[in-house]
Image 1: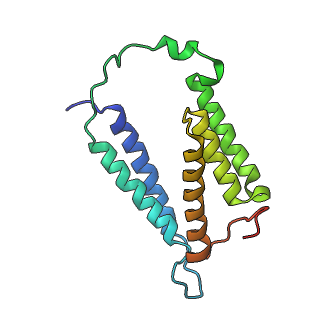
Image 2: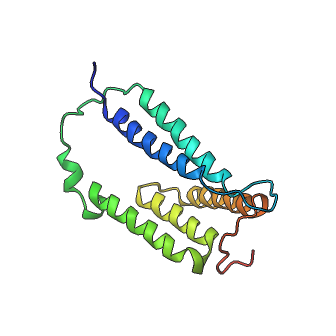
Length: 160
C-alpha cells in the first residue's frame, strides 16, 4: 500500500467535512410556502460541490516540485508583513473586518473592499483591472442572490 500525499490527506478531511455538511443540509426543513428556490437548496449544492472537489483533489496527480525538500529561508527573512504567517494572520483579520463591516457598509462595498484589498496585499498591481473584476463579480453575486433567489443582503450606504 502506498502512502497518501498531502493533497490526498486534505481531500479526505474535506470529504468528511463535506459529508457532514451534506448530512446537516438534508436536515433543513422545507419552507411551508411554495418557492422556486427553497432554503435548503444552497447548502445542498455547496456540500455537493465541496464533495466533488475533494474527490477531484484526491485523484489529482501531484507534480514534482523542484527543491520541495529544501526550506526557503528567504521567505521568512523579508518584511514582516510578507512572511507566510503574517499573510495568514492578515487574511484572517481582513475576513473578521469584513464580517464586522458587512451590515454598516453593505454587501457590495464590503465585499469589493475585501477582494481589492486582499488581491493588492498579495501582490496584484493592476488596480484598475482588480477593481473592475472584483466589483463585477460582487455585483453579479449580489444581483443573483437578491433578484433571482430573493435572499436579503445588507445594502448599507448604497440605495439598492
